Image 1 (cartoon, rainbow, N blue to C red):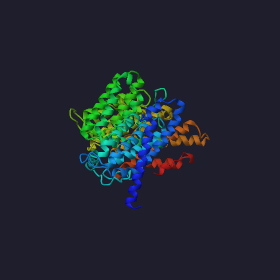
Image 2 (image 1 turned 120 degrees about the vertical axis):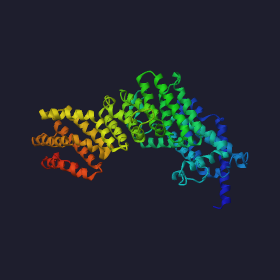
Image 3 (image 1 turned 60 degrees about the horizontal axis):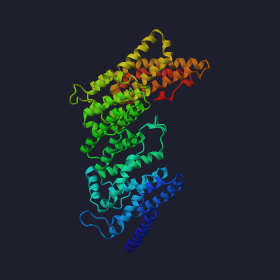
Amino acid sequence: MPPEQYNNLKMLTMEIYRLLIDQINIITLNTNMFDKYLKLSDTKKSGFEEFCMQFSLGLISFFKTNFSFIQQFDFPMGYSNGNEFTAKYLNEIYRGLEYISQIYLIPNDEIFNALSEFWNWFCFKVCFLQERDINPENGIPPAVNSIQVFNSYIQFTNESYIYRNCYYKVLESVRFSLIKKMTKPIEVKIDLDENGEIVMDHITNTIYQTLHENMKDCLIYLTHLDPTATEKIMLDLLLNQTVESEWNPNLLNSLCWSIGCITGAMEENHEKRFVIMVIKHLLNLCELKRGKTNKAIVASNIMYVVGQYPRFLNAHWKFLKTVIKKLFEFMHESHPGVQDFACETFMKISIKCGDQLVKINEGENEPYINVLARSIKDDTADLQAHQKLMFYEALGNMIDRDPDIMRRGELIKKMMEPTYYDWTTIFSSAGQNPEILQNVQSIKAMDLIIKLNERVALATKTVYFSFGTYIFNDIINAYSYYTGLVNEIYNSGNMQSTPAKMFKSIKKTILKFIITMIHTNEDANMIINNILPSLGNLIESYRVAHIENRYALISF
């Protein structure tokens, strides 16, 4: 199509759009669409929702088709007070976007999903006004290879006449809606049921994940465009939660999920001030709230927020230390989900902030990892088995960051002292009476100890073997012992007995531990000289085992 004909067609489209908006303004009497919805009776809301859905989809189609054409008439602020195009159409462009922002508040999942996708698309386009024809589906332009380059795009947008006089005002409303309605990140396993009680939520919903990612990305773009505006909304809402009449656990959840979403979107010093204020407000809220459920809700949000800001934690040791101590308090809390969340956050910190734990920080006499290794028994006393596995692996991750290989070995030995004591107690008793190894409690204890060792081996790799030798021979002998027991049960024809299942289960645990020890060990000579000779018993156990008592894992 020739350029002149194309422009004429586009101008005709703009004129039709202007007339449509004018008519809608007359029909609605310029009232807010969401306010209109709230005033309707329940019998009329369904029909209004359908109208809003179709109307907003039409507006979305218009903006996606004509956004680049509209931007042809944009110019930097200060050059002019407008042009013929902006004088004629800017008010209707604003009004159309405002309608979408109002409809976004209507509590309808279909509308919310569609409009979240649009606002993500729109905010991306606004961030990159400098590249008018950019396609959001292709992601951030390759030229944006540093924060400095990205900031130059943001500066260009902030100096845009149409952004300042149209988009900015609408996006203020969108920013507020996103923060108040932010959906739950997939890593958050705690939720509220219809009675306001905390429950564990392990459901993974692809549509829900996509919605969250759209909202998250959109809020990140908006924060880059105006970090101060985002900060003000968040802190004002958070401060309101300290007022008893304003307390709303669902709003607090969405607010904190929003805070977690924008990590890295602010300049570092700005982020520092922001995070300090957020944590102070949350800790104050935790003190103010009464009732275990309310305290657990605040606690879970504290853990989520701090886990999302490793840059801040790495730069502020005292704050990181306070956070870890708070996590340990939560690990002794029996409310559903709190211990899980505390352990998951501790794991996240071990991965993102491990370097801070293995050096002597200001005001400390020793690396904090020493304290953690010494106090591991007390810190994990109230944790369940799967939570202890996370804790031990997290501590292993931290130890692995220590540059001194000798210290790593010493730290592993120190942290494993309580479990090694339990291990030697079991096997000392078994030396007097081997049937103790058939006791249910003994098998459960051994199974956990082996799994804890496997997690530490996975985290600390080659260095772990210096401790692993203390239990390695016992483990090989235990495997042979349980193989014999299972053979006896199978030969008697009682293949489905509970003891047989328990014995087979711990054999699998043993095999997984041995495989991990070998796969994570980078010292070939250590494997050849210290591990392989002991595996002869393992291979012999496989050879004499009943056919139903053999595992393919043995061929590792």
